[in-house]
Length: 262
Ligand SMILES: *[C@@H]1O[C@H](CO)[C@@H](O)[C@H](O)[C@H]1NC(C)=O
Ligand SMILES: *[C@@H]1O[C@H](CO)[C@@H](O)[C@H](O)[C@H]1NC(C)=O
Ligand SMILES: *[C@@H]1O[C@H](CO)[C@@H](O)[C@H](O)[C@H]1NC(C)=O
Image (cartoon, rainbow, N blue to C red; front, side, top):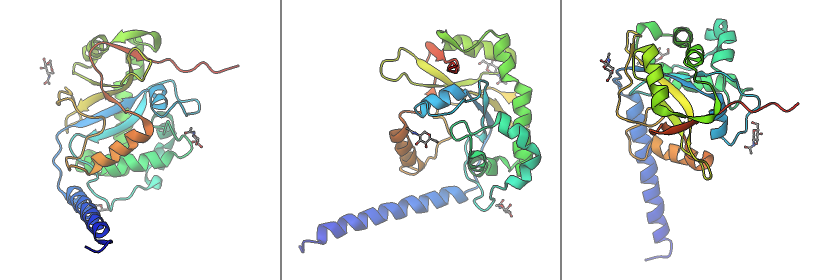
């Protein structure tokens, strides 16, 4: 064998792998993906910041929108580009309730991502079939759920003492009459408990609340292509540390905002 042969073998298998990744990715994206429910995902900005090493400037001290996600579909139409102009009437509400917690100065980047990944699939419903409708309906659902005031009323407030996950879940189920899904950051080294990060409530295609009783899954609906998006997630996880996962039974920390130094 010539000395360069092993390298070329390596290279060609690498190319094959890349080709395979790209072609499966393309296949997956072009598919008519069947999804069944919508997940209204709200996150706790303090935890979002914690997830990225507490590198945010004054995150909101109320639950904000992460996204409105069809359960089993992503990126359904890659030629339907995000256009900020279409939602300009919604901007005051968007900035307030759907901020990019981590990059507050690049708002539309987050919205673009949510639209392209989730909105283009949700748009299969007439009620959500434009950017204005998708973002507008998401804001309406957010206001309708009034999660912040519900939590207040239930006495679930950010605290240095811990909550039982089952208590939070039961309390939410008692007001919404459906089973929510809670996502937590697993305890970091030196921490006693997980940290509450995300509350998901599920809706039918008629936008009626329903149980989130899917089998336990990851934060974002995951691609079923082995090595596809999973590899990207693994990469992101390697950079940012372990991300959110379904909260385990037991205690959780619902972190208060940092005291602003005077
Ligand atoms: C923190 O965020 C700022 C602004 O987004 C960025 O420039 C900086 O590199 C980040 N620092 C770390 C340690 O990630
Ligand atoms: C994708 O979006 C474009 C732009 O809105 C639209 O013209 C096209 O019909 C859409 N394709 C599908 C398959 O929905
Ligand atoms: C939601 O789950 C609860 C508890 O498992 C069950 O009693 C209820 O019937 C479910 N509701 C719907 C609409 O499926």
